[in-house]
Amino acid sequence: MAIVLQSATEFTVELANELLKDELSEPVISVSVKPLGEGVGLMSSIARAKLQLADGSETSIIVKVIAQTDNVDISKSLNFYANEINYYRHLASINPIASPRCLFADIDAETQDFLLILEDLGDAAAGDQLQDCTEEVMALAFRQAGQMHGTFWGKTENYPWLKYQNNPEVTDFRQNVIYQPGVEPTINNFSECFSGNLPEVVTKIGEQFDVLFDRAMSGPQTVIHGDYRVDNMLLPVKDGKVSIIGVDWQNTTGGNGPHDIAYFCSQSCSKELELVVEMQRLRSYHDTLLEYGVKDYSFDQCLEDYRINLMITMITPIAICGTLDSGNERGKELGRVILGRSLAALQRMDCGALLA
Image (tube, rainbow, N blue to C red; front, side):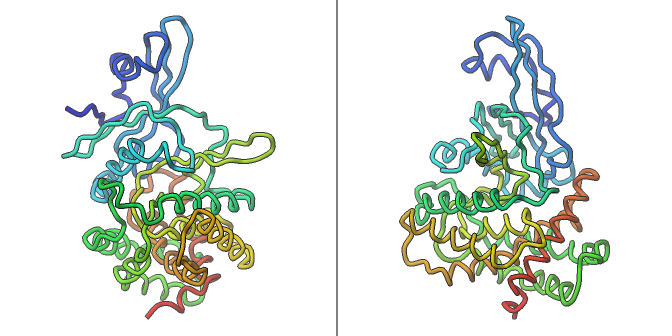
């Protein structure tokens, strides 16, 4: 029987001693659980558990369980929880993008209730999506995405458990349950973010979402993060250089590589980003793919894939602003910020010109 929890507050001394006995030098005598961060639990619930050991010392771990909001059913429908458990079981150790060490991972195959325990790397270097990312972080994010995609390019069949983004049933769910119901309330409630023909472009993306999504996720398949943004990164600095530790691998699937960088740019980069800088980063991403042995994939194809993926990544701000339970005020502000960035990216790359 799977060991899972409904809430991180259910993590007890008994569970700590049972699940972490090989990790800890002393028995746990008390546990204190506190929700981690505000506005970061849209699709799951994350907490820090402080453990007091028998010798008087303390340590802490990260506990992750199902969402404590109405979003839990959507998360299960999109297979988010199984995706992340499988990622830590099978891919984390070979991915060029580092992730926290997994101490325990289990899931109920029928209910998708789960329990994930990770090492606690602290929160001092946590990325903050309400702040525009620096050019250094952008450059590193594009390069490391290229390293990950190059590593798994054309090799997804080696992981039979891996789900794929290009799934007609799931795409239909995204279009009809998430995107289209959220378009009108997003445009109405955040009208100040829309200018020119953007309302028409965003509406057309919803109407053509299934076709666009199929095109965006076609072509060579690799492993993608699927939610690649600074809020899902720890950014420690050592010797003056920043590094990336990726977290929240719930949308890890097979898919089109440029999806991750389109998602990153539209979700994390300033809406004032200059086109020339974006193109430089895209060139760097493509060069990295070539360095990792990717063949028969031109820069022009990479650019087209990127532009189409910018359109389907609109589903995230639409979902937060118009469909999902945003959780709290930070969640609402996050929706507003990434909506502005995503709309700017559509304009910058003239994505509307690709619509029928």
